[in-house]
Length: 143
Image (cartoon, rainbow, N blue to C red; front, top):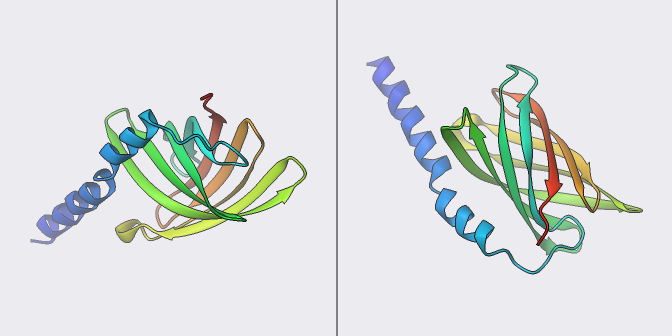
C-alpha cells in the first residue's frame, strides 16, 4: 500500500510540473518583444552538484516591476522527462550585471531557491531544493 501511495504521489507531481509545458512552448515560439535587462529567452544547461545529472534548460523571463522579474524554466531530464516551473526573481543592478535571487514552493519537491547573476548575454545561477542543488548556465537567445 505504501508503494502505491508513493507512486501515486510521484505521478501527481509529474502531472503538475508538466502541465505547463504546452503553454511554455507556445510562449517560447511567440516571444514578447521585451529583451531588456534580464527579460527575454534564455537557453543552456542545468547540472546537479549532488548527483552529477544534467540536462537542457530554457527560460522565459518577463519584467514584473522595477526590480522584479518572473522566470519560467523548462528543464529536461535524460531527454525524456521535462518540467516547467516558475520563480519570482528580485534583481539588483550593478553596472551591466544583474544580480538576482528568488524562491518558490515546488510542492512535493519542497522549497526551491536560486541566486545568480546575468549580463546582456550570459546567465549563471545556483539552485537548491529539498532533494537537489546545482547550477544553471544559459545564453540569451537572439530574437
